[in-house]
Image 1 (spheres, rainbow, N blue to C red):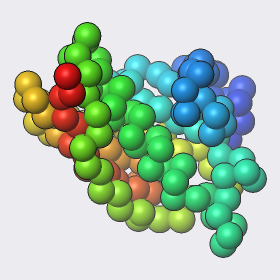
Image 2: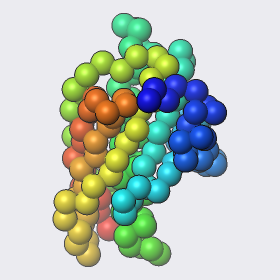
Image 3: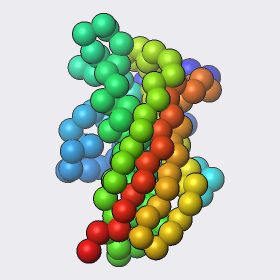
Image 4: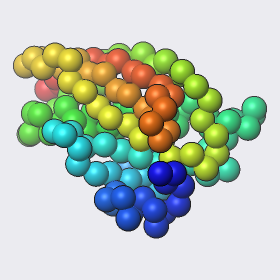
Length: 138
């Protein structure tokens, strides 16, 4: 099923993420619970395109950072973590109008560092992957 509209996302169980921080300013970001983690999604708009007409990689990077960072916060409530490093692989072109869905996956959970992997999908096609280290900050 192709989910390409706001109403289709709501009908598929997504809800709009209400957020006053940076992520809330890049467009309509959606969230839903999924198998032990919270997924994020965005319905891409013309404002998200790069000079080649595809969706800008910075949108994908921002979604990866937020989805993985939020999952770390859920694992360690009350503690503060910051992104120490993140590597992103852009696997396929994303077109304006596509819905990008991000799934965060814990690869190792420690007291001072959490290692994450993120996968980005448009429908069932993987379009990007990321690995990140989140470090405890005091």
